[in-house]
Image 1 (cartoon, rainbow, N blue to C red):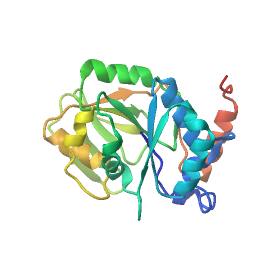
Image 2 (cartoon, rainbow, N blue to C red):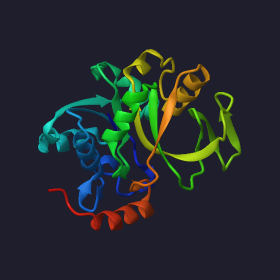
Image 3 (cartoon, helix red, strand yellow):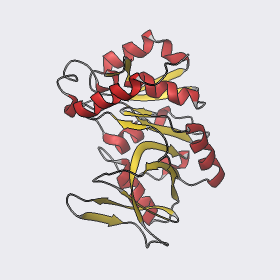
Image 4 (tube, rainbow, N blue to C red):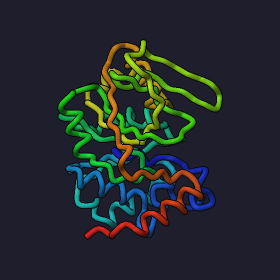
Length: 242
């Protein structure tokens, strides 16, 4: 699933007349970049949640032939439902036969998604979260057993779901998840909510939520004009797809 319902307020005025998902990085819309990465990793079916300029996204995907795979859209009327609410709203569209990737549309990376899925399949946690070592004001708290909490360095807020095991590290979340379909039966939150709220509660209840370190991989978040300019510069130097 590609999370593409965001309004993209920090990218205005680019997102006033077009969705954030179709903002181009080095000439290619972010949505297509993420879709191609997921397909390269083995995905043969994509769910895309949409809200802001939803018609433009759906029309673009149709013109691109669905990128050669089965596509389903999850429309969020009224307002975006955030990561958790968006996932829950799309639940009826999932086949639930195997784990699936959940990917932010504004994240560009070259991490090995197939390897991440393989690690998840081997260890079989409820969720595996891609992380990288970088400066961030909203890190995950991670110890020897994986995810154990959240923090915000600007406000001093810190939430720990369980007692730490060994050394706890503050590390950045990379906007990519692998989830076991059982998570749908465990989401009790409703409306608009972050998936991180769900992870925090489930970790407190004893569910395994692990991490996949992608610190050595290229990772770009296209959240504002400065980051877009940087991503353009970086991706212009990356050889085009053949």
